Length: 168
Image (cartoon, rainbow, N blue to C red; front, side, top):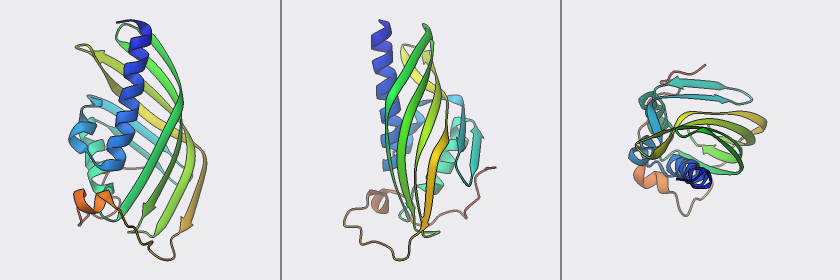
């Protein structure tokens, strides 16, 4: 495989990750990461860290519900393949989330920094995280009339209490 093919595979991996986050496709999301993956998300009002893919997936199961909507758009990748089984990436992310448990809309832009590992010919994420460039958190005064809401049909309707996952 050429370096350009590796870069394309890493791009597809990252796009798959964001799609699976927004659509609550937990089983497919699991395949994006090595088992010992690490995660660090630094927002304006939070910092969340995990070590271990299953801890992150538990967090995602709790977030992605009928009371949550998210949208992630990433691009402008700067990917460096450091050797035949390792790479690093920097991405620009625009995202928004509607949290109807807390009645809060969060929008922002982040710089994502990832590390990738290639195993058995397939790239996986070994670390992902972001630091906010900006973040806007606004109250939702009235729940919008969502005419389509995928997580309402596939996500759990009853959630664990907020803060059940380990966060800082």
